[in-house]
Image (cartoon, rainbow, N blue to C red):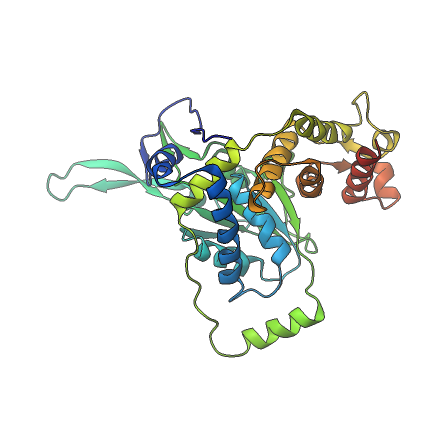
Length: 361
């Protein structure tokens, strides 16, 4: 296994960048790293430190935190779904502190405009010359970790303002394009029980999220610990466990990790098995699924499997890694049909059967 240089290829150059891009970060920092094997060992220690720092303010959610770290290492985005009061917002903001990244929270509301997210141009006058010119004022999207709180409460036009940022890590305003800070992650939240005044996310935007993570109620012991922590004195301060530059190097390592063709074929097979029109789709998928996962699901399963293996200190992912990440990758990409809804069959039920069938085969 060897290091490779990785950077996104752009159609045009951005006008400015608030921070060095990913290519610069990797180039500047790889000289300090000894070997991929040593970086893998170091990465396991980083995970422990991040979990320890986040644990100062967050009780439980270890599984969710691990999946968020997988998302970040794979350079993806995540959608967190859970009822109010489960510390979704606090979890994301605390994680940003532990990663020493700039954090920005955007509260999505029905009257939110696209410019409230990306920024806007204002007319400024030079006091010296009296000359007027337009100046771009950056919006809250210009940060490393973006919390899109209750993202389904704003109309599709405003939701679409995130599409270019999530896919291209840049924002276009008029004739100019501005690069977003690196690393860049969008972590969005949704409330599954309140439907009034909400706008379901379009499939094109849902597909940009690597994971959909379901956050449930804590168990009795964790809930008691939460009550004790939040009703007492101020919780301990969270300290950075890893810098943005180090995180960029770990992302480069994940990209450099080799994957066996059989693992890639397995991930592709899982995604294709969710499509009712596919030649080898199971009969229950043909009957129960209205729309299956697209090619981006295959890519995300492979990347997430590589990140999961890296966090575990392993130099290459296996089929178990793909099976472990598949439910969170496929959940928001598989749309149950009328028959499934009539019988109370959820997307998770369908995905479980697809995974079980692949393991049996």
